[in-house]
Length: 533
Image (cartoon, rainbow, N blue to C red; front, side):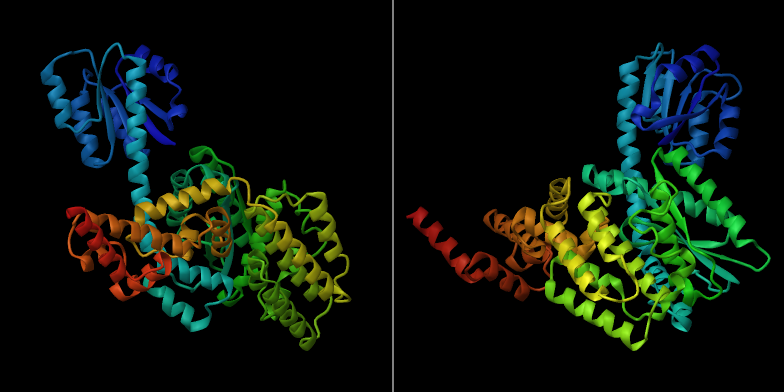
C-alpha cells in the first residue's frame, strides 16, 4: 500500500474525496488530509507520503508552491493537482513542477482512478528497482549472515567476513528471529513482482525498526524467509524487549502491507557459534504459530524447544537427505541414512538426541511438503509420519526412516504442485527477457524463493527440458535471428547472447542442434545460393 495525502482548503472537498474513492482498490491508503500547504509540509515531515493530491488555490501556501517544496524534499513524490481553473498558464506551471496529473474540478471519478492506476504502476516499478539494487548490495552480507546462523561460519572467520559490512559480533547475547509471508508461494505463482514487493516491504519495515533501536541485523534467509539477528547487552532483557519488538513489527506489517505474516523467535545464546540452535528454535516457533499458536501436529511430541541444542552434537545435516528425497535419488537417500546411523552409533546417541534428529527431519519434510502444496494433515501423510515417530530409541528407526523417505519421494513424484505451471511459465518468461545475463538454476531458484533441486525437477517435468538446455535454446534462437538479419559479426552476436567465449557456444550448439555451428552456416549459405540461382 502506498500513502496518499489529500490537501484542500474546502472541508467538503476533503471529506467528499476521502469517502468517494476506495483507495485500497488501487493499492493506496489515505493517511491524512490537510487544509493548507503549511499543514501538508508539516505532515510530510513526519509521515512518508508517496502521492500528494492537492488543490491549487489555497491560503498561506498554494498548491503549486506546495508541489515545488515537497518535490525538493522527495524528488520521487508523485503529485496530482486539482484546479477550478481551465487555463493553460496553471497547467503549464503544474507541468513545470513535475506533477503526474492535472484534474479540473468537479473531479471526474474515472479520470482520477485512471491516474491512480498509472501512478501505482510507476511506484511499483520504482519500488522493484530499489529492491533489486538493495538485494544486489546486500548479497554478500546476507550470505555470510545466513552461514553464521546456520553454523557454517564460525569464530574469527565470521568476524573477519562480516566486519566490512558493519556487522559487529560484540553482544552479550544473540538470538535469531525468522519472518515469513504466509501465502508467499501462492503469491509467487500469481505474480513474482508482487511477491518481491511484499518481501521488500517486510524487510524494509524490520530494517527501519532495527536502525531506530540499533540492536540487530536483517538478512534474507532461505526460500523467502526474512531473518533477523538480534544482539543485546547484559543490561537488556532479551525476552521482554525482543517480544515487544516482534509484536510491533507484526502490527506494522499487517497495517501497511495488508498481508498475513508469521514469525518465530529462538532463545538467546551467549556465543555466535551457538546461533544454529537459536535459528532452529525460531523455525520451530514459526511453524507452531502458523498452526494457530500450537505446536504443529506434524511435530508434536517429538521434542521441546529446550531440547533442540542437543542437535549441535551432530555433524550430519538433514538438508542433504531432504534434497535427495526431493530429487527422487534413492541411492543418495540410502547413503545419507547410512551416514546418519553410523554417527548415531559412534556417538552412542540416545533419548533427546534421537528425538532432536527426528525433529530436524520432520521439520525438513514439513517445509518440503509445503513447497509442493501437500497438506501435512492428509490422513496418509499423518499415518506414515506417526509410524516414523512411534519410537525414538533407535530401535528399527533406520528401517522406518528409509521407508518414509521412499514414501515421500513417491508422493512428490505423483504430480506437480498446484500452480506449478504458472511458476514455470514465469521462469520461462524471465529467461526469454534476461537470457543475456549470467543465469543459473540456483540464481533463478533464489529469485522465485524456491529450492533449486525442486525447481530443476519441476522445470524438466513441465517443459521436457533441463533448465540450462532451455536457456541455451533461447540464446541460440536469438543468435540465429540476429545472423539472419545481418546484425553484426558472429563473435559479437554470440557475446551479446550471454556467452563469454565462442568455444562454449559451439559445444552447446552441437549438443542441441545436432550439427556443428560451421555446418549450420554452410547450410545457410547453400540455401541462399540456391534461392539466388
